[in-house]
Image (cartoon, rainbow, N blue to C red; front, side, top):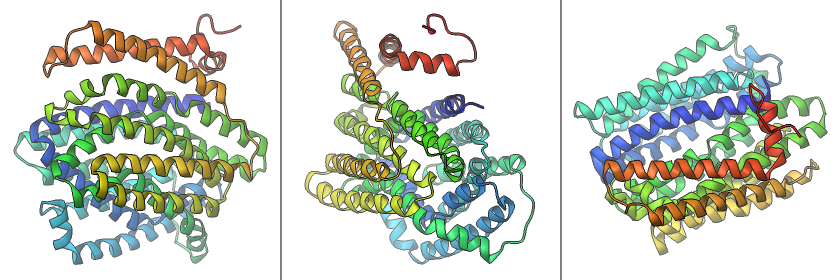
Amino acid sequence: MKLGQTSVVYFFSKFGSSIAGFVATLYIARALGAEVYGIYALALAVLAWLKIGGKIGVSSAITKRVSEGEDSDAYLMTGLGMMAAIFTIAATAAIVLRNPLESYIGAPVLSVLLVLLAAELFRSFTSSALQGQHLVHVYAVLDPVNVTMRSVLQIGAIVVGFSVAGLLAAYAFASIAIALVSLLVISVTLTRPTLRHAKSLFEYAKYAWLGNLKKMSFSWIDVTVLGFFVSSALVGVYSIAWSIAAVLTIFSKGISTTLFPEISKISSQEDVSQVSNLVTDALRYNGLFMIPGLVGAAVLGERILLIYGSEFVVGTTVLLILIAARTIYGYQKQLVNTINGIDRPDIAFRINAAFVVVNVILNVILIWQFGWLGAAVATTIAAAVTLVYAYFATRRFLEFDVPAMDIAYQCVAALCMGLVAYTVVAVGPPMEDSIVGHLTTVLIVGVGATVYFVSLYVLSREFRTTIDRNAPVDVPFVRE
């Protein structure tokens, strides 16, 4: 399967799961309100830190070693044993700290949270195995099933009267189910774990664990720190804004997820020129959805948040800053992904360490001084600083072109979209929390997206060529 087509499969699969997740999040937010959603977000923040303690980079190491093609069965079984052992340690620590953890979350849900931790680590193992065996498209297809199942179960839990505990239990059930299905696809033979394979996994994991910590820091440090300084309601609003921003990163994640095993394989064959081309392609399309999303948030952010309820509209500025943060972080992640792919986890370790340190320090200081806006600004600054670091670090090993013109075309197309959307908003019906008002917002988003892609299609020859190369049928007016 072509890399472009694999990324598209990943994107549409993730987009499908995002629709299911959107429906569930929308229902939870409107049914339970910002305060309860904030408690749920804090529970997931605690889960995120427990997961990082459980994974310690082992899942990344499994993907890397299995993708290299040697002793894959032994690496899988050894990695599973390592993850199970570390889970025991993490769960024990959580039980010891039960009272302060449940006090921080605001609900007595640690027991079900530990079940969810085990389920998520199990799913993480099977996902790593799929990616390492170059079955990214299978992993991408299974993911929307997982999210859809979780969403349906969570909505059902609310309907029958459950609250945060029911949401977490539904999450755990879906994770276990999709992990069991993944086992049917993975090609693995039961093999006795060996010390040699454990050492090899550890050698990669001792650097890669910080990559997982960086990812958790980016996704959860702001919410975690906010839990100490602001109300659960504001945490809920912030988390909704973050989830909207996260939807725009789907294609970027698809690129990095697809390219990692390919970069790993090519670099092991010492074909540096092909790796350089892959890096340029990753940067070329990283902002394909995030750049117009940033402009769209500036024009329609208030309307989009109103869909979740009037109490969420206060997060409009936060939403705009968070999309900027995720856009910058997307470029940084592509470069760090490349460094890991060429088997230099030590360099990625330093970049990730810099991100974690800067992000944690700035979040504490800026949230303390400026509240939740400080959280969004801190994450943006941390992403920008480490993007520069990652760029110069990658240039030490690879000569690659920065596709400045392609990024410029995306910016111009996004501005065209923003102008049209602003005009429609100005002459259209006023914003209101009603079915008609929300359908109007969806319609404006659709018109804006159409204008963006048509504009980009006209402006960028590279974009037209990419469509031609990866489309299943011939596209008119593409070949020149």
